[in-house]
Structures are given as structure tokens and as C-alpha cells.
Length: 113
Ligand SMILES: [Zn+2]
Image (cartoon, rainbow, N blue to C red):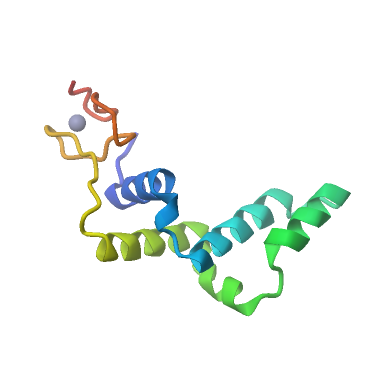
């Protein structure tokens, strides 16, 4: 499994510190997930979720997602890191890769414990 530091950092920050997303960023992320999950679903539930969260035709959301959900998540993570220098990222003391969780003691990548 190859290691992509920016991808791991993005996963870690957005999973463990979701409250640091701005309200707009949280809205974009919800819209992206709703669109992805219900894109081809014509059922009533899908229609309601899309109406509430999908924000189809919202140019601000579309612009934020122009580079895809992963591109959006990476730029949101970059903003969070730039504005929250106090944020501690749990990195392996041996290989310096990002640990799976803030409390993880064993490295998923090199096995260091
Ligand atoms: Zn390691």
C-alpha cells in the first residue's frame, strides 16, 4: 500500500477534527456525499436527501467541487492546518507517517509500537 502524506493528513484532519470545517465547507462536503450516494437513485428517500443536502444547481457548491471531492477536502485540510497551528497531528516517531487516530500507539505503516 503506497503512502500519500497529503491524502493521509486530509483523512486524519477531516475525520478527527470535523468541527474545524467552516459551515460552508461542511455544507459542500454534505452536498458531495449526497450527490455521490444518490446520483442514480430515483426513490423518494433519495429525492428528499438531495433536496435537503444535494444543493443541485448551487453555483457556489459547484465551484467548490470543480476539482472533485478529494481536491476540495485537501484544500479544506490545508486551510485548517494553516489556521490552526495548535493542531497536533499524531505522527509515528519512527517513520513520521500519519497515525490512524489521535490516540493510536502503533503505526499502521511501519508497525512501530
Ligand atoms: Zn511508522
